[in-house]
Length: 89
Image (cartoon, rainbow, N blue to C red):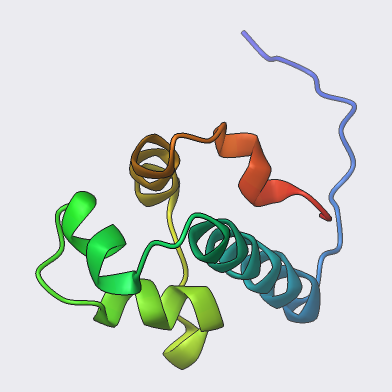
């Protein structure tokens, strides 16, 4: 059985993806700071032992970024809807 699809390939360059991850990281950082929560407290709340992963993903250092599972855990820890991290995209 052959399934036909009318979708067209999209052309998204690396700059767009980098901007996507950067915006998400900035949104996490902004919300975290608004709530007065440190990177360490957030890291511990989502199961990390240090701030490294949070710090790098918030600033896109070493091309580290949040994945969907991390964003879900962060949204629960900060008690905000996950879609808040995608504002401005």
